[in-house]
Length: 455
Image (cartoon, rainbow, N blue to C red; front, side, top):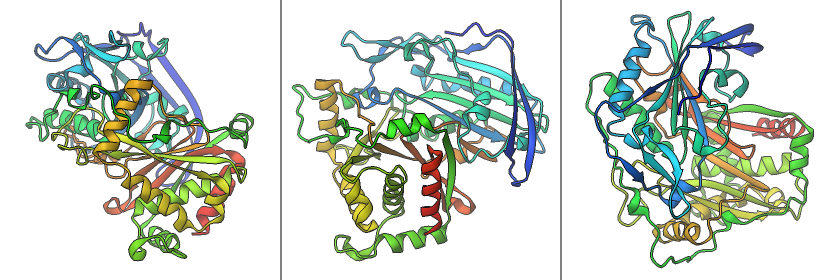
């Protein structure tokens, strides 16, 4: 499916911070060349319906990312041709991405492997790449011009699994913008796909060929629900959080936790602790506990308001047997913790760290199989009411993608998919810092920032 996209010019005036933090007024114009084309696999691939597991079914949301490339030696003249040809070649291995989503006879999402192709768009910008501003924080209004959305799609079935846009800039740099449906792969799978695409562009064999058979994560027959699965629990919004979001503008900010700040946070996180064995914690535990607690305070949740933390755990090594190397689908499962806001905010940070640790420990083969079977029986999706969802990209190698122009000078998300989502991204020298990206109502963001500065 290609939207009949007439020549489209997007003009944007904005005041943004560029990479050297000086203010600059940028009048960004992106011209998308028409029509969008379909890139098909280079050779014939399997046809028919392609099974998506129940771990894929739960997260059919579009994830938008951009990768900025610049090479003084190479320029951008060949960028479209090289990336497009390599896409056609890598789709032979990742053939379901060239198909289209449909509904199976069982009423679930599945892929019809039609070889229809990935939607591919060429575009040009009227400025230099470093003038598009600070992409270390999501900015859908600006960065959204660098990805291709099917604007006339009425539902998720009308959106191709992947769309790609290459935007060339006046400085000789270019941006690859991708819209990818999360039901096709999790962060690890997406990283392996994009890096494989880059390897093909450089004439190299795939380091990690995809393992495509997702039926290894099919539900058991009969299903066995052996856990509580509070990730699906609907929580009453006693504190009128949704009302606050509707009344105030949502601000998106990026908070950088450098190694020194992470060290201080870990010390705070293990103070007054009787429950933390060894009186230590991981960076993820400390950051997740801090953000959950600080966000709960910032939103002024009532003391008896239940609040839920959701985050994904990579199950690849936790399944028995382990998932094969290169598993192409979602190998993550959501785990959770629920407590009252008063308890979370009034007790020491170590209490929240303990809750995060227990949520991680809960995930084993039995828990994950139970979650797969829970969806089989209920078709329920996790509820996000009074919930914080943490997504961790800090260990993903998106910054290593190389199509022949070297690694990206910058890469990151275009937007956060939901207001409840907070993203952890690696940053800085040797990727040792963590950028925490989140969106909050304006008044709540001020309170969150105060707590960040107190670390």
